[in-house]
Length: 157
Image 1 (cartoon, helix red, strand yellow):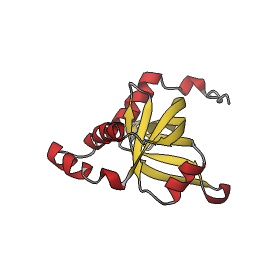
Image 2 (cartoon, helix red, strand yellow; image 1 turned 135 degrees about the vertical axis):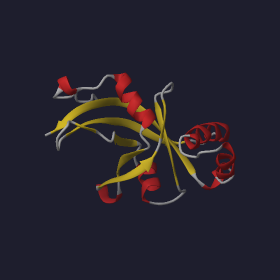
Image 3 (cartoon, one colour; image 1 turned 180 degrees about the vertical axis):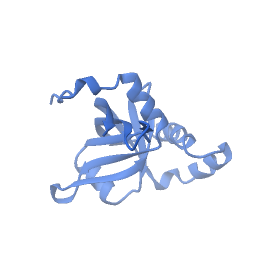
Image 4 (cartoon, helix red, strand yellow; image 1 turned 90 degrees about the vertical axis):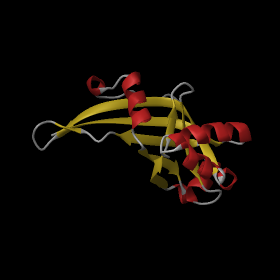
């Protein structure tokens, strides 16, 4: 499938600006095709591996998100920054939309490597990170391969 190009191309962010938002922001919204074909979107923490152009997040071994990904690999992920004041009530906000294919990371060595990098984004010390990683067998690590990415700068006024 070919993806649509942005209609408002003058507001488009560069690939580098999109990558910066994915590196810096801590939360985004994952959308999957849920039960009965209903959209299911939820906020998640994530880590962006810029070199591989892949996103990672974790989930339980059961549940709505897990089942939806097992049933259909196609996902959409959105992130926005906190925005900046324009000097009045309005804001400039940057956002990124990623379309991709999700899969569960099965290789134990890869899972540990990516989980360690993902955890380092959120966990303040190496000691705490290693303590958290002891429970790695109780969770799934999901990898999203980016198929299409766009970013947009919006003046909310």
